[in-house]
Length: 243
Image 1: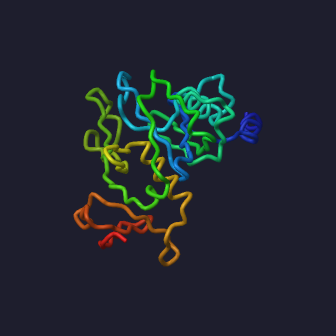
Image 2: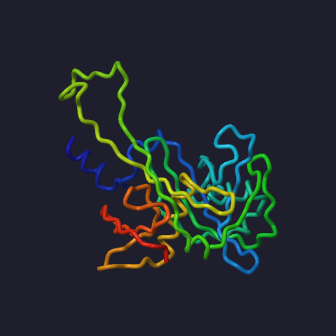
Image 3: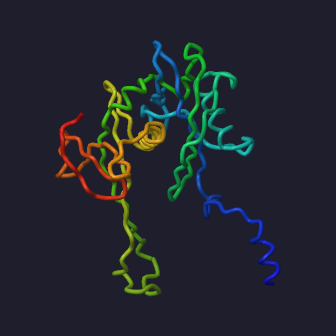
């Protein structure tokens, strides 16, 4: 039996535990050139959709069994939603993937070679718009938090765990970034992926060798009109006027 276990474990590759039960999707953060400027393209979801109608997103969707890999799914969905041929999308590389209790999202960055060829699929996309990358890099997003708490049902076997109904379940928080462009509000997972992309591609200002991130924090020590500098991995906030 030990030899069988040793053989099984020797060549096993680790993955996300329970991923077979998770919804797996892939998205593309599209870069385009518009009016001679490098921009990020966003979609406005069709208003007749049942899920998140009218919200701002990146192209993407479910990974199909026929997709060769996650990137293939992101490109396929982008082409379907924007009316593009496969050759019109140049993949540039992956971002970090997102895992939560019900889904895995694989984000990628891509270059759309000709903005003029975009023909949005109106069954899924109400409109598209572009935001200059220079604007996003010089924009301070609002940051708020959503609390996550465990709430077992009444029929949970509390008698089988230490302290029963008084068991101290762990809680957490999800960061929610908000970017504004005219009357457009970019938030949720789209803003989280965008924020990650901006951090990955723009060298961060460093103090004492540690990266600092500029955010507007929903924190009493950081009013909305002030720019707070947070040292990554700490809870120190320093108020100041935006630079």
